[in-house]
Image (cartoon, rainbow, N blue to C red; front, side, top):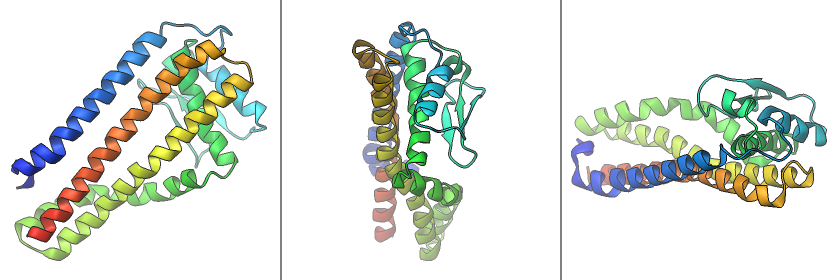
Length: 226
């Protein structure tokens, strides 16, 4: 099967693994460094997020603590900004940057940022991605073109979601840094640390998008050959 194909291993798995590991190392390095640096204002991540939301007139977003390491995310459906304990209570530059980034997603929704709305709409479709693999395996094993094409179609939803993630995440980081500086929540010197953390975190989305695109291209090429 394709996971034993040298082409798949060399042109899909290996590059994807290398980029993913590199991105993870960058994230860990940035977190290890700036989780030890306290912000001058002494505010926690939750307090920073609240300051940003209130400054932009957003009063319908709840800030809640969630369990799990780096489980931080913004839920646009429930309008809830969920922060891990390390970020919710943390007063480091890393905690401030991550909390501000998630608040940046709330700003996107408040300003009707189109890519965020598109991502929210695609997420339910991407849930069907779990069907992609069995469809591809069955279709290739029994040479049923319809199943292969259907599997590729489901997998395309995943790729589309990963690609849309890129502008959404980078835009949220830009909004976060602008708000932090404008509101005086960080100094220009501290902004360098925030930037390092957010840029490193964004690389994980780049790695995920690259891996998804390479897999999709491989599946399309394999379907044509078969």
